[in-house]
View 1 (cartoon, helix red, strand yellow):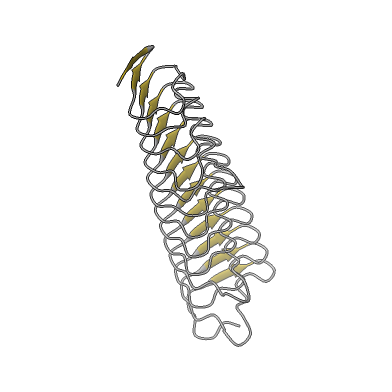
View 2 (cartoon, one colour; view 1 turned 90 degrees about the vertical axis):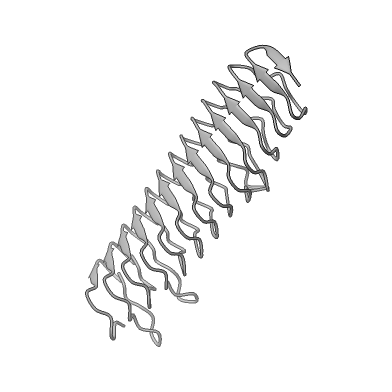
Length: 231
């Protein structure tokens, strides 16, 4: 169903077929794989490589531009989203209108639909997050969140396997560096945790912890270095 579109490349069954009644008019798109960019209409400069990559839907055509999707089902639900990069099976799979997100790794940012400026690197990083702004997760399961109360908060940073893994809801502005650091935080905010399993019991707000320790629980505004606690 291409009409006025130009400089497009489609390789694969039903790749970039467009929609009857709403033909493809976009330009400089590349689709390689089964149904890749299948329902694109006006989008431009998109690259989709892999089965169902950036497929869109017949009810809500893919009109976004400047997106890159590499891997099976990457950016599959994208509609108006712009400047997203997804590499790895199902990376950014549920994104619809979110912009400027980067996901590297299988199922990274899988559930995110509307978030912007999020970065996920590693298997299942930011897996259940559905929204949010400027969250950064590096490491398998970092900022993974919970399916019952997915992360929608902003400005969280987790570096390390499983760091801030259980974070939920509107939790925001938490920073965790180290394997499983901050694993106990669910809805807390403004916590800074540095070290292996550091803050593994923390559930409060505005705590600062440095070193392998986790004996602060629901308290707030504590500073712990090693085994020394100050208020």
